[in-house]
Length: 467
Image 1 (cartoon, rainbow, N blue to C red):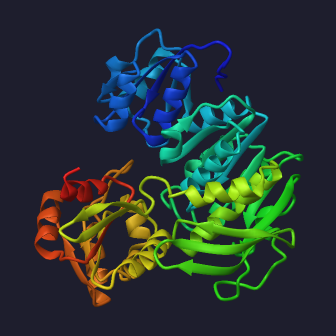
Image 2: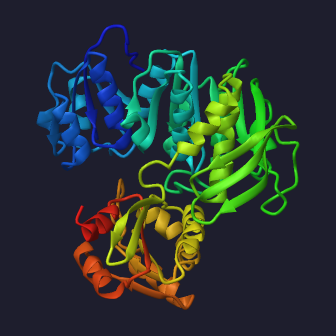
């Protein structure tokens, strides 16, 4: 594998530079003095921002974008082997790294690299921990899989040994990482176009945990079924966390980091008593809703306590945390209809989000859902229907293909049929314009409209608001 010498900036090209993570690392290396270029399939706010910084961005991935003076190319897991640029790179003998390999090499430059993994919640926890570290004057370098207003984007350059980064399991990417500390939030079936089954996913998380060195720590959600299978034969210290309040899940203060005595504040957030290794620490207030966010806060708190950040500083950071972009993000109100956007694209995430959303209105809860990838839609078709049925009315967009080609055997119409079987009022439209016109005609004052999915469905709500 090609090794980047981070002390000698070189010429680097990103295939898929418009991605939320790739763009962050492109900007990071640009700021370190690298000559950066890249390509993406279409123009976006992200690519235009990179251009404004002086980074050369090509629209369309063509062979001619690859120049002979490029020292190394970085590409994402979504780039296929027959991609014109990647083919040209190989023909020209230019070294190439995937995104995960780049991050893994970069992590070696930091004495305290912290990798946040899990099927759901990575961006939220990375964002929480990032805010706590920044407010606590630890000056971390940060890579988050969403836009975090507190750092002005998705990447932050720090000047210390602390590096906080999301660690995605897809294609076993996180096995290229070199973390000193790791977090495992949850383990569910997902990315079944790559993994064989849940057991295969669990094995991957176990291998990720084994990457942590003897003097490092793993923070793991003890509510993961049989989590001991993941933590067996690890060299590092293992710290568990979970919700101990019997009204919500269990009654177990033996977790190393535990939340008890949970109280909810209508639509504004929660408070809970924090216990660390059996000792009461303080009462914590969150201004994001959903019990899952209480769980998300616990490893962030645990890591921060270990770094000797004062509890008052931690509490203040969490009080000010409003969530990352596209995580139950309030977009605005039009005609008395509140519009929220959420990145949820897995049945577990949808269930959590819609359960919270139901408390926001006593009128109709609309969910405009864009399924993400054909393989995921096929695999979880009935689970998607069950999760979406929490909404009063569902509007479906076409499947967002992302890295996949249309196999021709699954569509949003299939999901609509499953919802109809559950007695739900469901509508399907092949274009965003038709969805927007339908919503304008049918949503009424007091309704809550949530756009949901990991694709570009967010633009529907923004269009209705004139953004």
